[in-house]
Length: 347
Ligand code: DNO
Image (cartoon, rainbow, N blue to C red; front, top):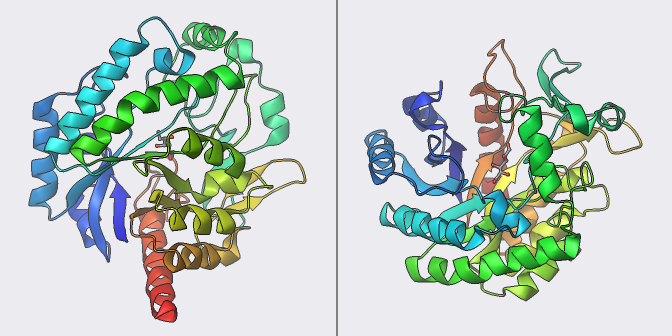
């Protein structure tokens, strides 16, 4: 496995030199952030990012994400143009040594939470999702933590409206249409696609979500069997769905050679509905058994990229919610320990 760390480019408040100092760190997970979804990225931007990483002694082999334009997901009139642009970005990334692309196929929204600074008993704060608070949100007047700045309420409404006639089935067809064009390019240029699961793994505001469960994954991989059509095993996202057996999923998809990337974090269920809070990474902090998950990966030949996912905000850091330095660095250290121990135990 290769331990990596998400880096938001030159504007990230966490310098590459700090990332490099985290034990076991081999590279960053990053993206081009100054180009709207669907457009072709600038060669110079990638070039300068790659140079900066190289100078810091870090690899740049994972991109998270090349966003999938809403026209592709909803099957809009311009989807072929946006798919073409997507393929151009893949080719460009490959030129700069990128080997894995994490992306998602969630209509309109990416991850959703109801609170960004949920106070924890240990004094830290973290992201959380409350079933009751979510139910109170009026989709006609959306003010979602983390999303307020991304879209105006009007823009969000019109985006949601685009999916009015897009059923689960139609969304799946659109996904397969996209993959059938993109995967051959990946195979040619030596990149693997790693779909990020729905977060949380259920439909929101009446919008379908189709990467939420083992059943969804099986269907997706059967439709496009190339192993370049793979998975980001995001333990916190799948784990929020209580019927998902994350240890089993880790074992099964690692054995298929489809887990190209793992986002490792833990969550704590906070009621008997579907509420959860993002806990510290350790098994004893949450409801997922991180040791069992790592063993399942190692035992089944996992050899992909790993990154410590969302950390708590600790030591008054006040960083980007989920993406401060301190707790993710602690998470990386813990995860490194789990991998070392699992590998030894396996010998
Ligand atoms: C959240 C991230 C996601 C992920 C995208 C991939 O913290 O894991 O936003 O980057 O879903 O497209």
